[in-house]
Length: 227
Image (cartoon, rainbow, N blue to C red):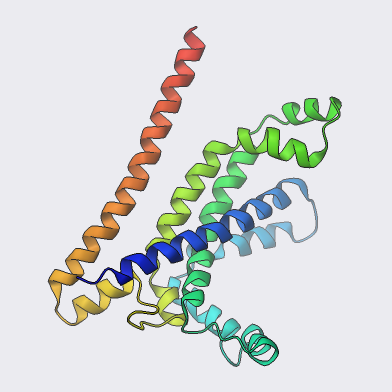
């Protein structure tokens, strides 16, 4: 069995996760603190990839980063870079579809924070940057972890958007979901089953680990309340 799709999928998922962690956290901070006309529309835009069919998201990305797209044309003419049908396109597709999950989790975590704790830090002379890293982020860590797990799992299993912008080039852009689809299409059920087992096991372990951690955290909180 070929392990290349597994290795590529993990690379794509981890790279996408780094992008959505930064972008999702920044967007959640913006939507928490800022008040401006069109805020509701912007939030709907952030969540859109969650409800759109992945192939539609992929088509929109294709229009954006393709050779004739506004971003694709600039990258090609100015720097000679082509994103389409490269692993970078797979990363972009994974990041776009995973972004809403990270954003929603972080936003919910930030909204659950008792703002009086942040205000208390301000009265003690802490700056906003220090408050964010020493008060806000630690208090939101549970939501952050949940968002990371969900976003990673989503990026790992992305198919529709990936095939639109990255294609299925063996050894270059073939991720696990693409390998499953084309193996099944060619009636190679053993290979398809192997990749299904791998991605199912990875996803199960991630969710199972998150559930165990939440259970341990709940037991720890109960113990503190008793004593």
